[in-house]
Image 1 (cartoon, rainbow, N blue to C red):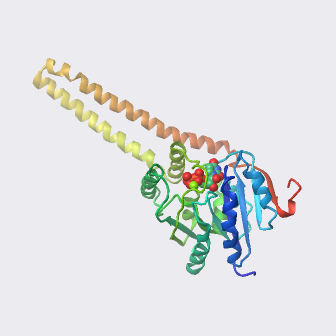
Image 2: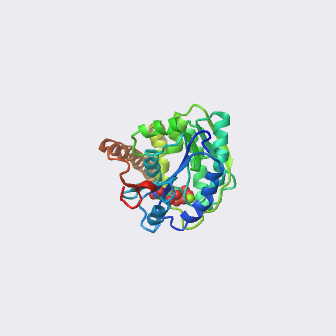
Image 3: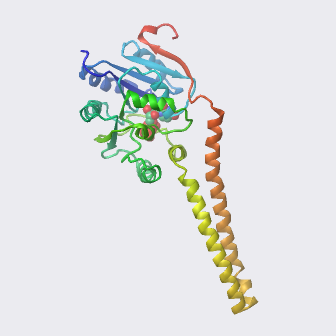
Amino acid sequence: MDNGAMISVVIPVYNEEANIPSLMERLRPVMKGMKRRYEIVFVDDGSWDNSLPILKDLTAEPEVRVVELTKNYGQHAAIFSGFSIVRGDIIITLDADLQNPPEEIPRLIRAMEEGEYDVVGTIRKERKDSVFRTFPSRLINIVARKITGIHMTDWGCMLRAYRRSIVEHMSECREQATFIPALAVYFAKHVTEIEVAHEERHAGESHYSLRKLINLQFDLVSSFSDFPLKLIMYTGLGMAFLGVSFAVMLGIARLVYGAAWAAEGVFTLFAALFAFVGFQFFALGVMGEYIGRIYKEVRKRPEYVIDKIYSSDSNGGSR
Ligand code: UDP
Ligand code: MG
């Protein structure tokens, strides 16, 4: 059965009790079918439903290990904690909600080995999400590509394959807020993307609200570029130029049309002023975002804290 590289699958779980059994039912035959050594690492990201007991029961299988985090740290931190214990040569990340069909894993592995790639990304064919979820993502894909200079067609799909060396490089980055697929591409020499099927969430609802999505995108942008800061600078410069031109124009008009006309121009002035004030607040906000992230970095809090690790040889005991 020992045939080629060992495969690790890392799955973050946050309140997915309704999905785990069906996920395992589909994942298990896929992994066994590849006739290789494999392991499945579930990370319980502070679920408060029945996910953890269900996962613990799964550790009766020698291939399954479960990392229990002390609280909810977010999807990417959860994946990182899984990365810290993986043993495989090829590491696959997968969502627990069955939106990424586990049946695509052998294709990812094949693509990786045939092309000797370091990272195999994925593009979701016919994405099965609501417009409210796909439209922001599409926008994000375009913006992220432009800003970071990292080419990836689809940033969001987590069903991806990484070589061990890439995972190690990523784990060495002790950044607080980061975005795994982008970080992987940053380190990789040979990257490819393949199309994979996408399904509707099996049960439950997406954990990403619009606010969380925006935050994640800012993580992505701010950890790879200072473009937003530059954008502000240039916009500020442009506005200052416009402001001065406007003042000159008003001055000339005052001379030409007299004081009565100029008094009526007061409202134009207000309009211009409001535009500037608005822009200043916006600029402050963007800088605040960066400063907030710098603050988080300097605090150097661990990105996640592992409470316990469960596996078949530790069953019964707590570790
Ligand atoms: N997830 C997590 N921690 C969180 C949010 C999500 O571990 O704080 C997991 C979740 O259980 C799922 C995956 O990350 O396995 C993707 O989450 P979700 O399906 O909610 O995101 P979407 O598919 O809408 O991007
Ligand atoms: Mg999902």
